Image 1 (cartoon, rainbow, N blue to C red):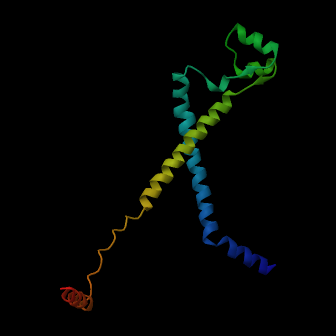
Image 2 (cartoon, rainbow, N blue to C red):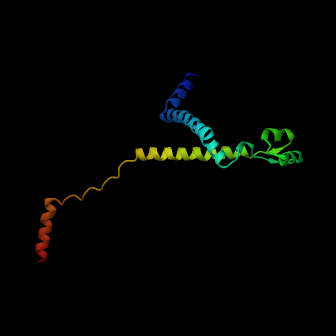
Image 3 (cartoon, rainbow, N blue to C red):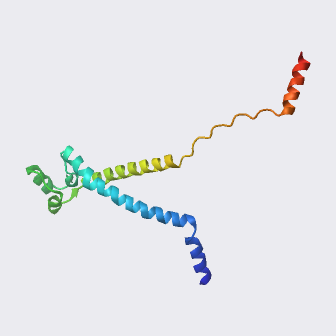
Length: 145
């Protein structure tokens, strides 16, 4: 039992496991921030510009739902009471949230990579030939003449 606990302790204390745990915690916190921005700030703007409330978008799958929808606007909750519906509005909201979160994460990773990028190494100028090579070059040139 002690050996198993020691192995577990060694596994947990590895750098990769600790880094992964920190990443998951920070990712969850970042996800909450982005979700709040999307749901509380962006989606109301998108909804008002598009003149649509995504949460109430649905297709009625029964005649009772379709008849009630033809009489006037029908909320999703009311439509569900009348019969089955294909509620795609929440899916659209989640899809838009995903795209925005993915873009934010992409931008963050790109920024971090830019910070970590090492400056391009300038190739060193070729070293000057040694005295011996210079002397041999002079001798070669004299022999050519």
